[in-house]
Length: 118
Image: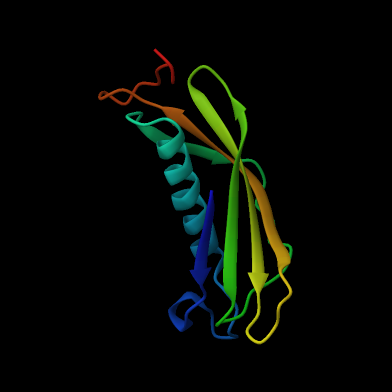
C-alpha cells in the first residue's frame, strides 16, 4: 500500500522540521489500513514497531510517500515493512527518511488475541 502526506506547518517544530510523532502516527494509520484491507473483517491493534530511528528530517512543505508491504504473518499477528520517503518542494528526488517494521495482533470483541484465519 502506498500513501502520501503533505507536511503542513502544524506538523513542524519551531525549526520547521517534521515532529516525529506525526510520522509515527501516519505509519501506524497507513499500515493498519493495509492490514484491514488484506484481512477484511479482522480487528487489528498495534502491538509494536521494531525500531524507531529518524534517519533524515523532513521540512514543512515536503511530500512524504509511505510504502507499506507485508513482511511476516503469524497465527494471531501480521507484520508490515514500512518505508518513508521525502520529496522536498521543487525537487524530483525521493530520500528515504525512515524504515521500520510494525506489528498488529488480531483481537476478538473482548480484546483477546485470536487467529487471523479461522
